[in-house]
Amino acid sequence: MKKMLSFILALVLCLTAFSAFAESTPTQFPALGMEITMPENAADMGLDVIAKADILNLTFVNDEVFTALLLIERMNDAMYDQVFSDEATANVLAATGMKTLGQQDGYTYIAFVASDFEDVSAYFTGVLGVDYNAFSDETKAAIDAALPLVKAAAESLSFIPIVPEEKTVGTFQTTDVNGSEVTESIFSGYDLTVVNVWGTFCGPCINEMPELAAWAKEMPENVQLVGIVSDVYTGDDASTAKAIMDKTGVTFPNLLASPTMVNLLSEVQYVPTTFFVDGEGNMVGEPVIGAYVSQYKQFVEDYLK
Image 1: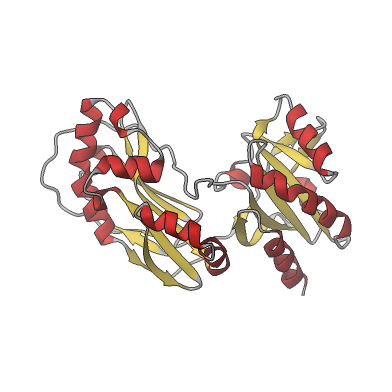
Image 2: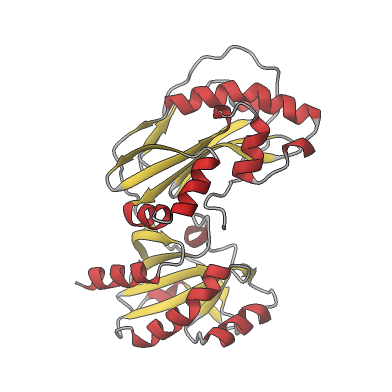
């Protein structure tokens, strides 16, 4: 099962000996709908909190590793129901220590907290798929010292009203798989563009492509489908992506990832992720994480109404 959660690289911070800590002012993430209070010496212990899109991670960083000691993901009701309607998947996640923090405004918040585990190595193995025993003694000691702060931060979590952010695709320059130059102007001239971000390594991405190919040919004239190959960058050999497209019957445009696609790709944590862009370059609605073509179609239908 493809991991549902992914981890974000934070700034490298120096580690110091553990000492008693005081709490700082809560940090709010209105777009996520949460706030967290970090111990004031968290940075000294190699900890930083990062929230992007539908995740909040408390990361631990030193010269040897970067990893997450607190993982939170927000799922909309449709995604939550689809993931947890499969009993086997729900059981696997429960066995790895997942807990539900709560629900608000059509979202469910799930979390994995390293300090909840009696044996922290079980957290690394079961949740992150990382061999804790491969760490140096210094890193193990630093992680152990940071766990009380992780526990305090996790206990400080609370919900705040969700304030959606206005997001645009911004300006970018890239090429498609055939080498033709493409900019953000690709979205103009259509009332709505469905953007499907996929990877050549991703089985679910490839499996949904024949259905996407057929759908692209049936779309109204004011709607288009555009793919972005997340693991092939401008200037790279795109032959693998082109072969996948040929095999699955895809003829709609597919762009290569580019460092200029900051707004487009910075919040994509998993593939496939599908989002929606209006003719003025505004991201509309909520991204769909996972291969759920029926959800893409439903959004388009509702949006056009």
